[in-house]
Image (cartoon, rainbow, N blue to C red; front, side, top):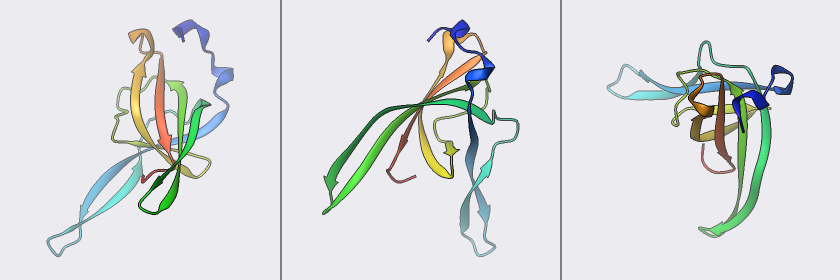
Length: 114
C-alpha cells in the first residue's frame, strides 16, 4: 500500500487500542488490566488475511490473521491490543507506511490467547 492510496472514507470500522497496565493490589502483588490508549485512532479499514484451525492439547483452536489501516499514532506498540466489535486481537506488527507518519498498517492475530 502506498501512503496516497488511503483516504478517510475507507476507515469504516470502529476500533479501540488498549494497553496492559499493572496496579498494586496492596498485598504485595498486582492485578493486570487493559485500559484504552488516550489519543489513539478510533477508526480503521479492516481486512481479513487468513483463518485456520489447529489441533493442540487435545482441542481445536481457531486462528485468524487480520490487517487494519488507521491514521498514524506514534504510541502504538506490539504488546498492545485492538478491540474490533467487542473482540480483542493481539498486535503482531506495526508498519508506518512509507515512514510518512500518515498511516499505520497493523497486523493482528485473533483466536489465540489474548
